[in-house]
Amino acid sequence: MAEYGYTVIYEPLSEGGYQVIVPALPGIVTYGRALEEAREMARDAILCHLRGLLKDGEENP
Image (cartoon, rainbow, N blue to C red; front, side):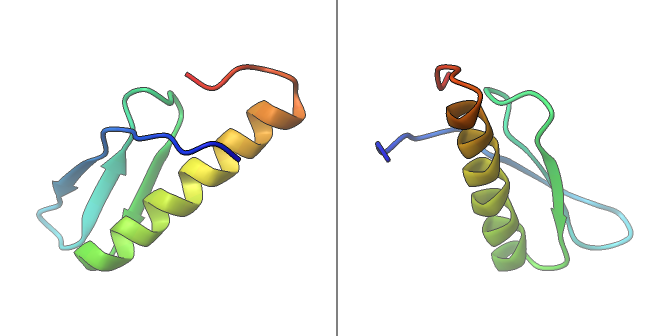
């Protein structure tokens, strides 16, 4: 698989943890209790999204 770079936004939540969005990949929203967990969740979500695009024969944004 090719290597891509995406902007990831980590938004601290008032109740704790971080909400994560990836603007270039609509529909990706995830969460982590700590910043490192949020980063791992973002990586997993991006990989799943890109695998789905590949499976459907669509191009990566």
